[in-house]
Image (cartoon, rainbow, N blue to C red; front, side, top):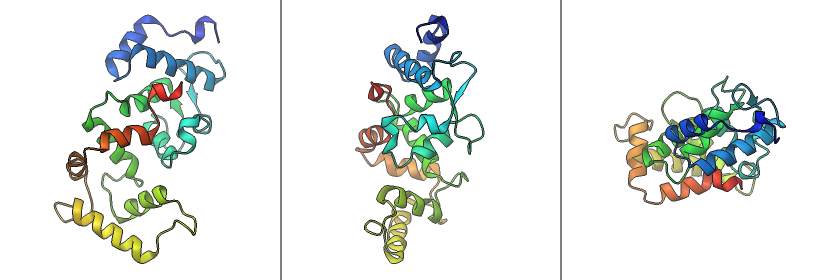
Length: 196
């Protein structure tokens, strides 16, 4: 791990800092964690870490959206979910305390858009609720409770009344929720400082 291949070049460090919402210390910590996940491999620039290894991070184990996080931030086949170092930095950056509400809400929307069609429809909302409540007999909503909840969400969020929530409608709802930035940042457990 202490070899030259595990060090992050200063020019790359500066570039990553300019392109993300992360501090130099957070980038260095992310690099250390990513290198450990690689098993001290040949460097983060050309290799990827499998979704299975990413999901071993304690900060993601309890996150109900852990699979979607990997899919959304992976620049390889989304079903593969493997992350390059830059994908990993993008994930950390999007949910860092310094990221803007627009960035956080954009990625939250993508994570909640389970079928990747650019809208949140009843199917996406049902999956979202199931992720948040769990799917055990004790926590699962009845069909009627689910129908009513989805109806309420669409009533509140679907401004153009087309039966779906698009990104701008989602961002409008989020802008009225002052707790979103704080709760989204902590619920995603993906700040670089959380990995220390």
